Image 1 (cartoon, rainbow, N blue to C red):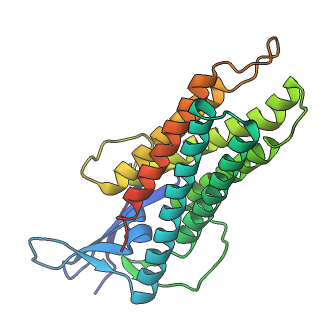
Image 2: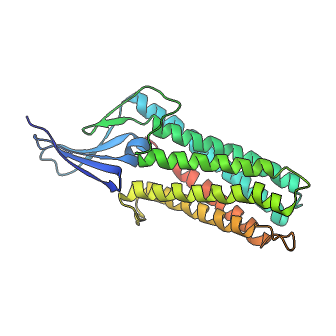
Image 3: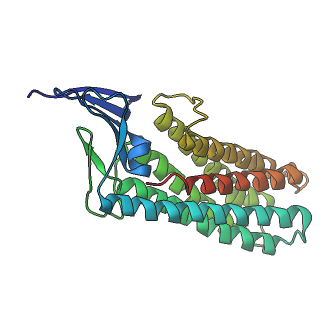
Length: 278
């Protein structure tokens, strides 16, 4: 029968799409995001005019559906709570403890969404010459040469760094240098990690190292809206730097509005993600 002809695409060391042309005339296309989110590969039988999506087995499909629902819901709730916290800071009482409490609750949901997103990658069906097969359940793996794993891991790491920022925000009596070191620096690092994760998301969905435009692709919209939220979070973080000379923020209004709108982006992306399921 001979071996199938294979073509790999991606960016740098990352392979995000593989195409197999089998000796019998069948063509199979595996794409990283479609396989891990929807549990499908694209198959065109010999002589067929159109392709069809071939799903993984029921075990993998059930896993992906449950994990996707949990992660998406966590980001929806986490984003909503961050928006409420920013709204309280901008329009409400402005009480620091109240805002910190709301942000901390939202951060727990972001932590959950980040880790479950990583679980979704770890437990996605694997491809063998285009056929998806289920592997045993795992709570952890180390696969840095997979762009989907690296993107999810960096996102989860970003949520953990944000947790440091949120916990430190409960501290009182800090000097300006301590505020910037314990609260502002983790905030900026978390934003950078979110931006890196978003860039890796574009790499996976665009099959190249720079962003692309695929407005008819739901997955592209999810990545794009999340990345917009990450940019707004970074704007907020930069505006939240405490000036040593005055003890005030660079711009409290921009900091609050950046957090509010960025968080809403994550909620919207979570709602979209609920539709990107097997």
